[in-house]
Image (tube, rainbow, N blue to C red; front, side, top):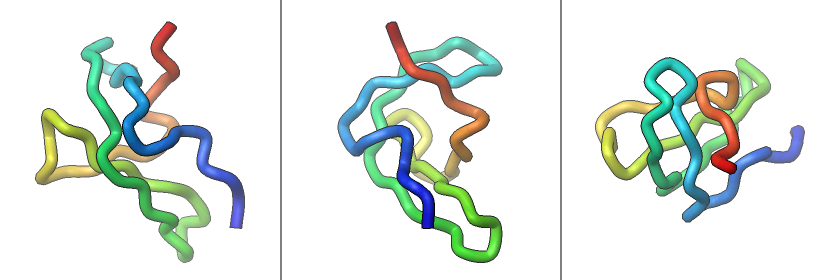
Length: 56
């Protein structure tokens, strides 16, 4: 299992819209070998690491 690049409570940007969101929860998806993240503004969906970027 790899290390998550984002932490719970971290503010990140959604790559597609550049919208700032806060990560609520992360989950390792074993069969895809990557993390998914639930964010505050869209709690009914999830994002993968490549869909998010660090906020500067």
